[in-house]
Length: 138
Image: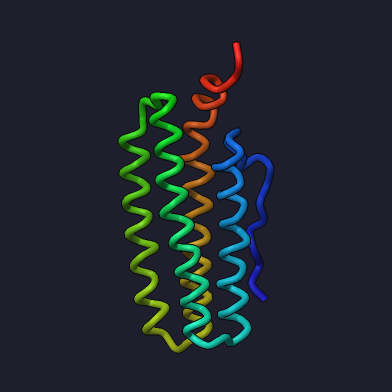
């Protein structure tokens, strides 16, 4: 079994919708890993991955809307990071379709997981203090 990265409360940015989506990514990716490790048919693995990809796209839209609402000064750069990350995640779908090796698939998913966690703890933590300052009453 793959060692997994668990959600930590320190990953929270202070917005219930965004934090809920972030938490869900850990579960969603676990489902993809479970499908790969369990020898699930390719269609099942791809279905889990595509649900994750759809949720990720929605999350990026929601996060950018939130940051625009509070005039986050680094929104453009953050949005560019989302675009690049989404392109990378989308490219992984073709790897999932082409690979017949569970070890290779597992590596691809683990790499994806690491990229998303890195984005969360570096890029998203950069806006956390801005968001908390601008959403606190009075």
